[in-house]
Length: 287
Image 1: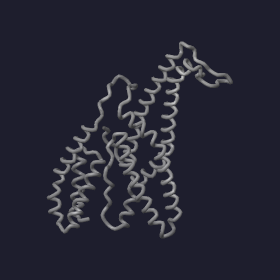
Image 2: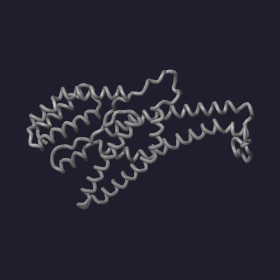
Image 3: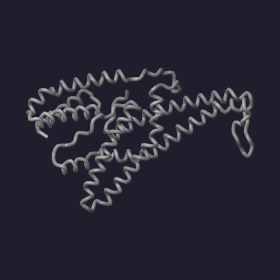
Image 4: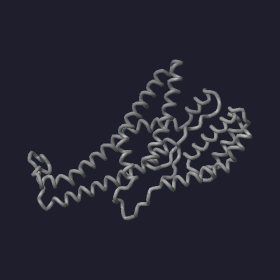
């Protein structure tokens, strides 16, 4: 990469940082700028002309921030009233529930890729073939980081990168050294491995809580109208609710549903910030 372009990208990143831009936005802006400038150079243009056409760092930073603010205003969900933790579920709550249920499948896939990739890389490290295997593993890890980021931004509402991390200029050896030194390579691997136990905990908690709540709501009425016992067997005997307990039990089920929704929203918000720190390296604003 041209030294003038490298200096321009550094200035653009510094300008966005000084203006309080989200780290994910800075990554996207740097990638877009590098892609445009490199394309102009490959087409026979000069770095000066390409920079003039793309805009000064201050102009580009202002444009990106204005576009980001417009998108955030359009996508920001309505503010929840401060009447307590328990409230009717909104779009963000349903999206958080969807992520917590999806996390079991993604956790299994991420864990398998992390374990297989690390095992192959270590076992083949003494052979020349170990280098391309490790490079392939790192490439897959960085791709997963981008995909997971898009899932998190869509369902959990925190700004994540929409462009890949800009590769450093230089030979493949210099890139290899950069990937080894970059903390995001290793924190992403840890994130992938940790997603399996987290996914199991998320999925089990949501399913178990929802199942108990659903039975508390429906079970008393099934007993009242069909004679089916509320609990098939307790200490060797079927358990029936007293008539006066039908409404309180159903009300408790509705309350438990609301608690599950509230906890899902809280856990989703926590996981979004945890993922932002692990995959991007810095916390950002949540919509």
